[in-house]
Amino acid sequence: MFKKISTGIVTVALSASLLAGCGSSGGNADGTVTLELFSNKTESIETYKGLIAEFEEQNPDIKIKFDAPPEAETVLKTRLTKNDMPDLMSIAGNATYGELGRAGVLHNFADDAILENVQPSYVDMINRLVGPEGEGVNGVPYATNANTVIYNKTKFEELGLTIPTTWDEFIATLEEVKAAGETPIYFTLKDAWTGMISWNSLGGNLAGEDFAERKNAGETTFVESYDQAADQMLQLLDYGHKDNFGVAYGDGNNAFAKGEAVFYIQGNWAIPEIQKANPDIELGVFAMPVTNDPAQNRLVSGVDVLLTMNEDTEHKEEAMKFIEFMMSKETASRYVEEQKAFSAIQDVFQEDPVFEGIKTNFESGLITSFPDHYYPAGLGAENIVQEFLIEQNKEAFLKKMDSEWDKVINR
Image 1 (cartoon, one colour):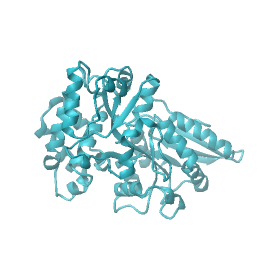
Image 2 (cartoon, one colour):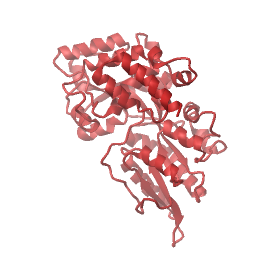
Image 3 (cartoon, rainbow, N blue to C red):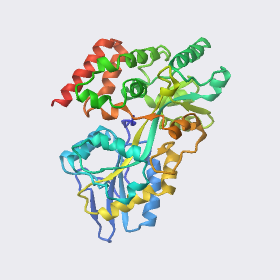
Image 4 (cartoon, helix red, strand yellow):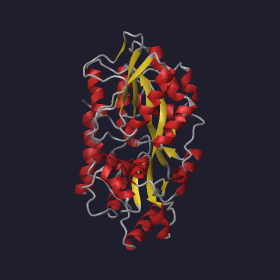
């Protein structure tokens, strides 16, 4: 699942300010070229500041104007309709990327040597998003993420717990925590998107990563394929705190950092935020054990960041130079280290011991992709899931997911 943009974050501009409605690139009087880099991740703003400064030092004839606005995907879709696309984009591998690829506005990297260093499985993931209507490979997978169960190691050890490998063991562990007077899971369901972490982990393992294809082919429905996932979502709610729907993501990171729960169902992107709030906290992660067969419990992982460029940019050579800079092993290693992410680039590894618990998933290929990355853009699944968790009417919820999906597809 890609991390949604939090509101209240102002646009960050480097080297020049971004003015609404201006062209996205241009030559300057001093002979330099300015390129706009658009990002949908507020968490990586500081990392990009450092990388852009390094790139500009190495390439004094190229300036990078960086834009990471609130509601970035809405902004990008609006700019698409106005034919005002940025030169460079650092965006999630999700349905919005698929739309851009089908619209034919992105560069085709299929014949570029840069793809040779990317793990093929992640290229396949983004190609499935564009589908047969697209042409070539419209992005370069860069950083990947994973849905995890983050745990407070200190509390975990104090309670004498062991890592659960099946759903029944996970529930038993949550019961132990509850019986000890601790909060088992810290939920932040005021932000609807945070419910999708559990939803994707359950759906990716129970409904299968080809659900969207089968749904569109009329071979299955949410009613048929997501019944068990919905039951298990509701079961998890029993192990939250007193205000599961009143706390937002940022406050949840701080609360978990303060030791207010043993487990936090979130993506790897939350770890730097937790550590900022409490640099001394000891964390571990494991893949949520969704089934009672450990061999079938896969880690949900997808393309969190892909790099791409506008097919019609006036400065393709300079734009490609920036992408090549980002793709170097040195730069890629710095990115995954600072962002606590994983790399789609071969031979670039996440070495932080926090992730020891999911290392074998990557090594053995026990991975599945984010189901909601293949949901149609505009479905608003996170809001429907949030409504379900509040009202707890499973039958109505699953039928609504089916009907809303069909509405979007048939528009």
